[in-house]
Each structure stands twice: as structure tokens, then as C-alpha cells.
Image: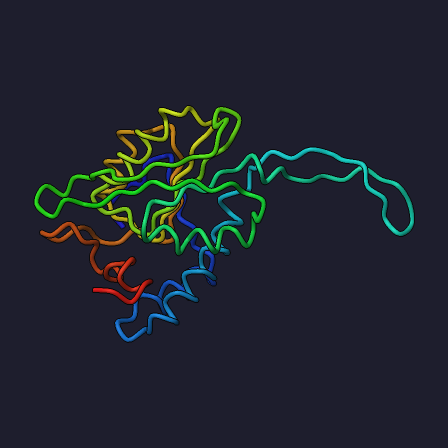
Length: 214
């Protein structure tokens, strides 16, 4: 790849992640198969995304003795789903962080301008003490991700990460320039965008394939 990744980007190239992504890309993958694979792939990606999650020691008792052991505080994590396709990643992430709070940002892409239009925003309280992980399967033009993070920063979370399955040089460049402080995690960087703003070779419209709509 001739494109140089921005310093805030991590490509999760684990063999299982790449295998499941390949199966999801296939045109003949059923809605049920696509949904299941997205759940499994998101769970695998979660391990890398939360690698630096803060931990604390607590006192516990094993069957043999008392000891101190480390735990995470999942309630300090907010999984932020960009509706509607972000729901597919959300379920997989919750397998790893079941105690996480959940936020939603409703955005749709204007077909003429390709700009993001907000129609819903709901976050847990006390965001200043929480770490936000924004979820959206596709980082294409970057407009939706930038709009979502712009809006999220208004409630001042302690930190923000962005997670997507697929992206492209145009999306990475736009998001990294707008929010260089936000780490980006993805499974693959595809060739680029077509004239309609879709990632190529991509996997189609993630929302439509997830929910069986057109």
C-alpha cells in the first residue's frame, strides 16, 4: 500500500479478523451470516481496542486464600453507536465489555452533498469521567465520523476512540485531520471511494446487509 497511515491509526490484522472480514465481503453472504460474522469480528477487534483500558486492584478470596487482583471498570466505558449500522459492532463489543454504558448518535448521509445530518443524540450522564468508543462499520468520506465526534466532544468525555471495519485513504485522512487526538482502529484499509462515496472494493452497504434492507 503506497498510502502512509496517519500515526493515530491501528490496523488489526489478526488472521481471524481478516478471515471473517473476507467472508463478510462475499456478495452471496446471507443476512444471517453477515450479522453473525460482524458480531464475531467485532468481539475479536474489541480485545485490541481496549488493550490500554485502565485497571484497579481489588481484594478477592479464592478457594484457597485472600488476594489482590486487577479488574476493569466497564461502567466507565461508553460504547457510542452511530445509527444504524453501528448496532452490529455494538453487540460484539458488549461480549467483551458487558458492563459498558451505551450512547447513540443518529446520522444519515445526504445523497447529494454526502454530508452528515444529525437526527438523534443520547449519551449517559457524567461523560467527563467516561471513555467513549465510537462505532461505525464504514469510514468512507469521514463526514459522519467527524460530525459524530464533533458532537460527542460537546459533552467532554475523558477520551474518545473510533472503531470501524473498513476504511480508505480519503476517510482516514479526513478524520485524522479533523480529530488527530482520536485513535482509529480498523480491520482493513481499502483502495478508495467511488463517485458515490462508497468504499471500493468494500462490502456494500453495511446497514442494508446487516438488517436485510435495500
